[in-house]
Length: 420
Ligand code: EPZ
Image (tube, rainbow, N blue to C red):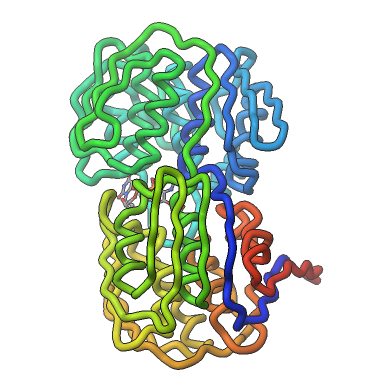
């Protein structure tokens, strides 16, 4: 079992570079399944989630060459259409591989995804959309078998702007007969990045980043080289760590446009923010002010930043309120914060956080990716030593988080313990 050992109390100062976006990398890696020509990707973060996704592509018969953040994938020799159950359960987002596999092979077999325990995370919107595209779906012994003669472009209106479902419809529709039009599509920047990558290989996708997206089916894709976007949630997490403990930071190789609601919340907390094309600088105030946050689909406040803000606000002046509207079980991290001395009350999907003067270092347990990152920030804010256990969750989505924080002056190291 891996843990972070954190000695809290240090202010953080300096510059760090954001890694490539986890949530753009996963669907963009899936585009290689659609394309029989080589797809070369840059800025792919070296994290558990991308490793698992690439492992699945290898098992399906793709050839993959990786050196540092450059990955070339060739799926010409791909000969399987079933995603291994044990890997599917490790990573919810592999469900978007299904859309790409069906798009190319007109069939796919996969199981109900697993992933972080932040909610039930059904895939009904994905499956309903597949049916609308003419794909038949059989569910037996925990597997979902999809099959069709052709994918016929259709108008699809989503009951909720699901990020994954939007990505799956796009991937499944690239070679469709006719055109697919998505209404109430997710508008996250990762959708725009996916469309830009697909269009760089010859797809015809318009409107990505808005709620209305049209995919005109094409016959063939050609080889491409593409650099994926930076990780907006990692950027927010690094900025948040400095806001929480004091000091100043510049995050480079990032895109301020992708997290404007988060930057505005940092401003409301009393931070000084300056931005330019690919950099964001933040200077922390002496004392964080309390604020209210309500998570929404993009461009609203991102749910993935909710736990990070929850940790920061534990020592704010006054009472803050956080409403989580996207996932029904994304407050697990607060139990550990309360053990560290935070004053937090949950009523349904609302947290009330009354700022305290100090937190105390404790042994705490990560229960999901962003909740784990929140505990790291709480450890940096605490007096004494905090041991954050189960950091395998955190390593799924953050590349070298400990090294980046250490470069800013944090006292943090990884400890490996044998579980007997
Ligand atoms: C993506 O998850 C991200 N993951 C999540 O990031 C992010 O929190 C989420 O979008 C929202 O922005 C990746 O991109 C790999 P959704 P996804 O489909 O696609 C419900 C992180 O920490 N829903 O937009 O699973 C669902 O239960 C992760 O990096 C259905 O009801 O999110 C949830 O309540 C966590 N039926 C809401 O919609 C469906 O078929 C949002 O889900 C699909 C979703």
